[in-house]
Image 1 (cartoon, rainbow, N blue to C red):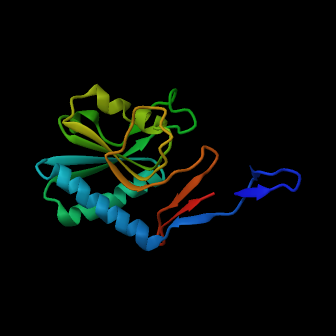
Image 2: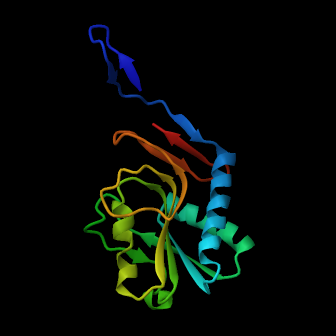
Image 3: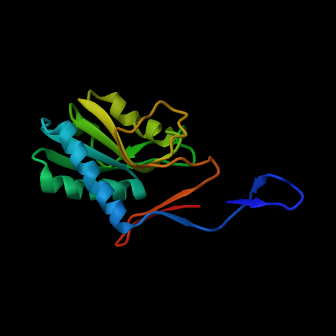
Length: 181
């Protein structure tokens, strides 16, 4: 939010607790359905796709994508959770709720709710680099494009230009919304 301070002739960023609705429930649902169709289009020849969601809203998004994919895809779909310390991903152990050996030679789809710098996805990818996989793709609901790591999403629900001080809040529940603070 920009406010004018009387003695200054230019806007000054001010702290705000206001939320701005970026995507309402219907828009979020439509983005997820569209992403599922894009995933199918790029992987229709695959025998199996592993959808790996980063714990939290990333895993919830992964579950919603799997739900939509099961309606339209002929390939086998496996949903797994990635647990990583988001505050210190470089030093945390990345845990999967599946054995790595069962993921060999499969297509891996890493899913998170928001892509900011690419740091979390980069470190979440670590276990999959220890085994031979067919390919690794990335899906995010919101891409903020402040990339500091070489991660570019294969599937994006919504690209949003923000400042580094902005915060994106994704709520995936009975009513789903995306807010900008």
